[in-house]
Image 1: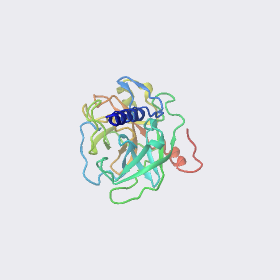
Image 2 (image 1 turned 90 degrees about the horizontal axis):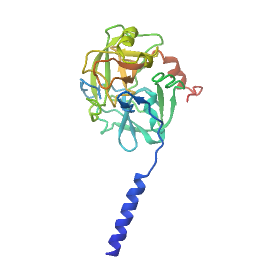
Image 3 (image 1 turned 135 degrees about the vertical axis):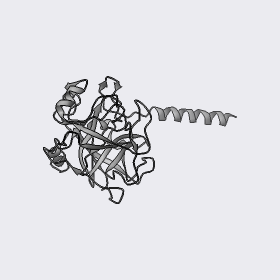
Image 4 (image 1 turned 90 degrees about the vertical axis):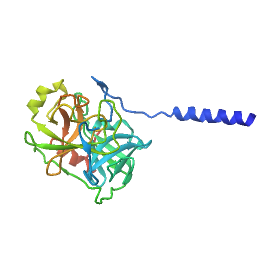
Length: 272
């Protein structure tokens, strides 16, 4: 009996110890809907077929939780949003080659990241970052890089852009394990500025989409890709009025940050 009591005490102590493991996270910005989560599912979308968006990755923590979306742009580089790097890199992994992030095609540990030094200066600006994988990503039919939009290029008003992600289908809802996809309309910067609630959060480094209420990004989509008809990466999910409640979605402009991205993938590229 004494042995059973002793074992029970040891189990309880071990559980308490495990719960007290501390992981330092970067502070989050306050948001009008609560705290901005590093997970911003596609609302109004549909399940993507096998092999769709082979550039899409799930950035997961090593505890098995989906954190953010991202895009393969080179064998060792993932493009995502800066606010997705709340988790220290040693607690992150990259899942590739799947439309269900719980069933990875492959997994890659992370050994570094490069965050734009102007992130959140001012708030919600320069929300762009790169993640470096510990080993090169192996390309196959389900895993491929995507081409970056050229510097200075912009979609045309009304262009159909494809958003993919594993985020929630409603505000603060559960994530979808099946990759969602939806077509959204590009809107010009001036129109976007008039339509968002806080124009101060919008900068020249952003591009916007809006189709209709009930269609757009949500929690869990952050950092994920916005792609044009030519399969070119034009945007990285940054922020919006969660979730698809009748306001534009705002993305980091890949064309605007093209030179920064290219430089950061070299040894000469230093970031914060």
